[in-house]
Each structure stands twice: as C-alpha cells, then as structure tokens.
Length: 167
Image (cartoon, rainbow, N blue to C red):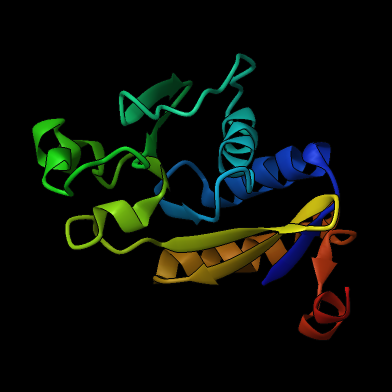
C-alpha cells in the first residue's frame, strides 16, 4: 500500500488510522531518513489510544513506554544503538512481548536481534509532504492492511504506483 501524506496533520491522521487498524498489538518497523516523519507517525498511532501529550523520540533512552487504557505501547528509537545486543540489556525480549504494540524507529540498527515485524512502514520525503509505503510481513500485518484499505478517511491519501512515480 502506498499513501501520500501532504502535510503533518495528514501524517498524524494516518498514524491514528494505523493505530486503530493495529488494535493495540503487533510490531511495526518505521524506516526512512532523518526527518522523514517516523516520530510524527508514532504520535498519530498513540493518539488512536487516547494519548494527548507530547511524543518525543526516545533517542537516548532507546524506548518510551505508554500505558494507555487497555493498550501498552513501546516506542523504540534505535538510532543511537551501538550494538543490537544492547537491546538484551534493556529487557528488549520482555518489551517485545506479543501483548504490547511495539513501534520501532531505525529497526535496521537492531538487525539480527529484533524479531520480524508485522508491518513495515517506509517513509520518504515527497515534495512538501511524505509518502508511506506499507508492507505486511505477517498474517497480522495482512489483516492490518486490509483494515486500512477499508477506512474511508484514507481515501484521499491513497496513491497508486504510477501516480506516485509521476509526482
């Protein structure tokens, strides 16, 4: 699935749709260059579960937990990870438990240690906005994409391969 997100508001709105589609569990890998909007998208995901406060990238702490109603979200930022084994020292195996939603920025830094994601979201700069390319990597990821495809609020953000290539 390829989406065009024209501004920050649309990116947050898409994140909220994604959060609802995830239904509070799974692993989402967010990739893209610095400034592509990974933390902005995470803010939207957290909004789906009622978080109204600020969302900062946990660059130095590696993970920020959010206990929201009946949902536990772990927001990882592995940008400064020196070695994937550091995830073991912070209790990564417990944090990546199936009963939590784990949103992981810079997952390539944890390669070889991180389990496979349910969904991979690749963000890239596109004119004044962003493009989000979503790929399911598990049965849960395929269900999430099907739920997203049925959400009316995403209809204006949908793009096909040819249309985005021409942009």
